[in-house]
Image (cartoon, rainbow over all chains, first blue to last red; front, side, top):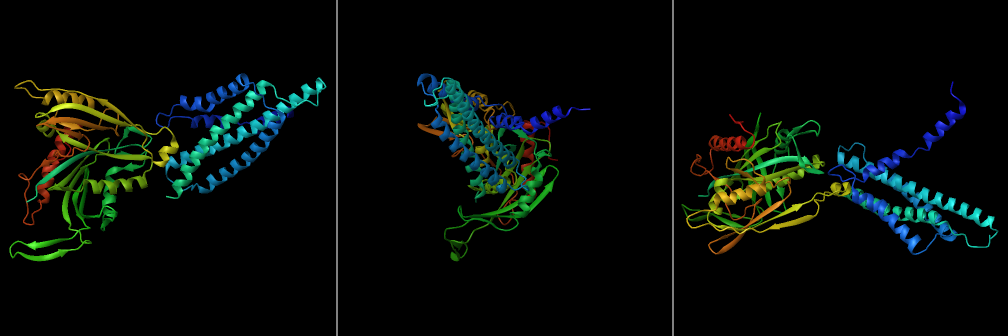
Amino acid sequence: MRYPALCLEEMMSNKLDIQDIVKDHFKTLKNVNSDKLSKIDIFSFYGAPLIISLIIVLVCNYSVDQDMGNILISIFSIFAGLLLNLIVLIFTLFNNETTSQIKKEFAREINTNITYSILITLLIITTILIGNLLSYIKTSEVNSLSDKIIFHPIISTIILFLVVHFLLLLFMVIKRIYAYVNKEFK
Amino acid sequence: MPSISLSVYTCTISLRNKPTELINLTSVDNGINLREFIFNFINSELSQYSINREIKDTLINEKADKHNNGISGILRYGEFGFTSDIVNVETNQNSYSRKTEDAELVPYFFNFQLIDNRKKGILIFQRFGNLGIKGSFVDRLNKYFNEKYDSLKLTINHVIPKEMLNEYFNAGELVGISFSQINPPTDIADVYKGNIGSEEIYHYTYSITAKRGGHLGSRILKILKEFLNGENDSGIIEIIPKGYQNSKIKATIKHKGRTRVFDMQNVAGVRSYIDISEEVNIQKNGHPEYDSIKTISDEIINEISSSLFGGNDVK
């Protein structure tokens, strides 16, 4: 007999399991000729954002504050909605009767990239909320609620990394959407 | 009387995103049977006049026979867009004034060897004087092929008999070779769009002068073979650079004070065609007898096939 608590945990983790989205997104970062992971892509999408965020936080001494956090939450909430619409567009344009393997593969990759981008927007929003919470706890402990809430450097680094990472993903998604939709007009 | 010659090509199929990996001409996995495909193309797309108004030419199938090893037949081809007067040389009278919309159709023989389990086919097209149908036929075929198989790529390459190159390269000196290599795109979006990728130029310069009483032929051919990865010694050089279907090779040759650059995949100015005017039987209408030209082309196919694959295929 299975314990209900364990069953619930299993159900919860399955529904929240986003591993497939991340794994499939990584698979799109490959050289289409060799089918191997592209080092340039990995550096572009992960290495470069990390370097940029570290420079901004450590060298420029910048930390994300509450105001910036609120702005980012607004921006990325809108992006999440727009990206969901894009998935619908791709789905609408895709004709299931197509025999083109390239087209199927391409549509699949675009869907994965957009879904992963939505994931990143959610991650940004979540990180900002966590940062808000941690900063709030910290400022309330020292009774300085009137001070501007500035996020911990690590939180700031993560937020900036995710923002730059998302911007680069957006470029990739725009390029792919353009290629996909443009061909439909031919 | 225009000469009758044959131009020889090989054809291959590869995956569009992996152009160096050739697949069999009949591949169940990829859903292609090239012999059937080309036969259907000729019988459907070319069953009526296929008019290209941009290039101003027209092509139509006269006959096409399919057999186990390939397809052979006659296509009629003509160009339009210009006027001319047709004169009867017996009466010196004007028989007809050709209009711009008139196309003079000439029959051209073709013979394709397309064996299922091979990765290369051999295509032979007849030429009539300086005119041929390879370009027009292949353009139409490629367009039809790309519409049906957008994940596959059909490539046609020149085949030049060694004697042709000997004739020119023996008398000149090779002063340079350059080759450009086209890299396929790494992003699936570019593959989908149909981009061929960026072009990198690699330039090598060689200067070789023949000693007095000597000749350059074998040495130049040896160098070219090293570049071109032609391992066979039977006298057939296939212009496909090593490891790459999409490269261009240019050889710069100095001859009688003039320097000439040859695009080795499209050897302009050098006759890379096999003149069969003396061998083939000509009918009263001035065109080659079908059985006669087919026999000659079958022999050429056998020679090329044996050097590429070993063994005779055409009986």
